[in-house]
Amino acid sequence: MKTAMGVQKQNRAPLLQGLAFGLVFGFLLQKGGATKYDVIIGQFLLTDFTIVKIMLSAVAIGMIGIHAMKTLGWVKLSPKSGSAGMNIIGGLIFGVGFALLGYCPGTIAGAIGNGYLDALVGGLAGILIGSGIFAALYPQLSQGILKKGYFGDLTLPRLLKLGDWVVVIPVALCIFLLLCWLEQAGL
Image (tube, rainbow, N blue to C red; front, side):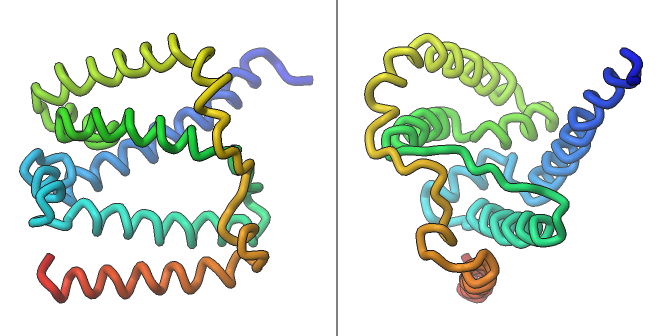
């Protein structure tokens, strides 16, 4: 029989793990320069590819790590269902916010940690206002555009009808080669 205190401690473990990973992620974003406005604007202007390198590195490492944990039986993947409409709306919200302020949600948190006032005032307000507007419009959106182009919980291995590692290894290799090319090109 579990006590109330035991259940409460058990429920906190994922939150504490998430907090720890979030702090490490924020630290690495800051160390990589991804929280600097000039670096982010440089990416928009295609003069500084630091952000692309960070994102591609994260995709490759995350993809290999998640599939390794899945292979070892440590995790069970449960991809969320999606649609073209969801991607379009999400991309528009993300893109407009990113273009207006020059931060994404992750870099806003890192920039706030660095003490950047624009991220605290504009970024946090933007997240709260944008989330509130989306939540208010969700009932209408979920009956319309969010359903358009529904593709379910499709993944690249399922789409190609191949095993996970048959897709993960070549994709990771392509990302690695692209990162090497970007570095060699001085981008």
